[in-house]
Length: 135
Image (cartoon, rainbow, N blue to C red; front, side):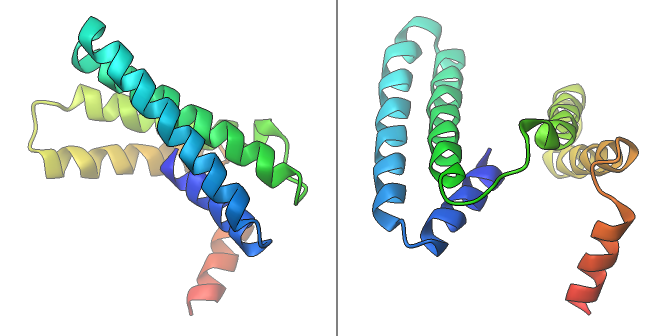
């Protein structure tokens, strides 16, 4: 979510919509705080986690709505493959809780990359363009 938030924040700022960005972030932070404060006493750590997800999800939704007024965004299905890769990464992190955290992080990232490539979430043209840009 953080990567997607950053993408849409950059879009808003690039189009001179800093006030819109500030408003969205403020409302999202307020929603996150309210959700965490409300759910933590009821559900404990899980409530805090759910509260953060609710706040971040709402913020992302508002950023997407703000950015779609400025640029033509690809359809929602275009983020399906990275989303599946992210779920695979989270599943890997959960599955490897018994290993040291750094090793767990490496395995999770490897799972993300493999799922993204195997699902066709990154094309050869994307890799070629990245290489040309970096070299």
